[in-house]
Amino acid sequence: INAEYGQALLHKLGLQAELPLQNVKKTNETAILGYTLDKAAQKAKSLLEEPVSSWTELQSKNEAKLFSKFYGKTSDGMEIFIARASIEIPAPPSKIFSAFWDIKSQKLWDITTIADISIVQDGNPQIIYEQHKVLSAACARRDVVLSRAHRSEGNGIFVYGTSTTSPKVPEQPKAVMTRAKVVFFGLKIENIGNKSRVEWVNCFDFAGPVHIKFVNQEVLRCSQRLVKLKELVLEK
Picture (cartoon, one colour):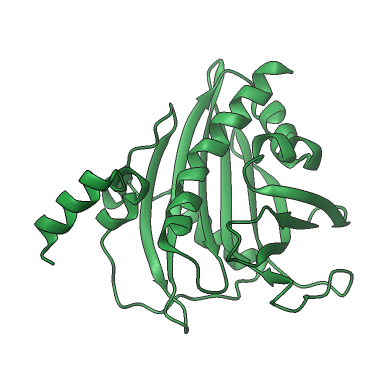
């Protein structure tokens, strides 16, 4: 099937909007996994400093801007993409940070993903454990152990993180729960006058085969989460 016919078929079936990553240029690069917290911060920060012209813009269907970039392939051939989203919120960075960092709030702004969340080790850095909602009846549930930290930067706050391990939450058999990975993430909250600009990069590895529509959904959710975060901040 040639590309033109494939695009027409997707459009006819109503699937084109569900698979926006088909427009993102891919490479043969192998995905680098296993970041330390410091290396995750460096990677996320460097990506946030890139001009958006080097990214592929996607239709977010909401007020947040959304972009993506191909990250690489895992050893089992799964493709990993990076999501980059931004939004402006009429609130100070401290208020936005509180809503993002608090795990009770996260269950609200990340309602489409989080089934349960708890703190494994408090502080800065902090380790949290997430159980994600079922993707489909044919897929095992996913969980994540995430190490994250924050620091003041300029006139704002930078939050960053990556997956880690903890004996308090050992990995379960894959038939029960698949341990997915946040390869890295970075959230930059910057004060600009009487509002803040929030920009997020997130790289997520399902750690096993899933349908391409779920990979697409995970990228789209980056912008959706920022919109939910804005709604939550403005409600408080």
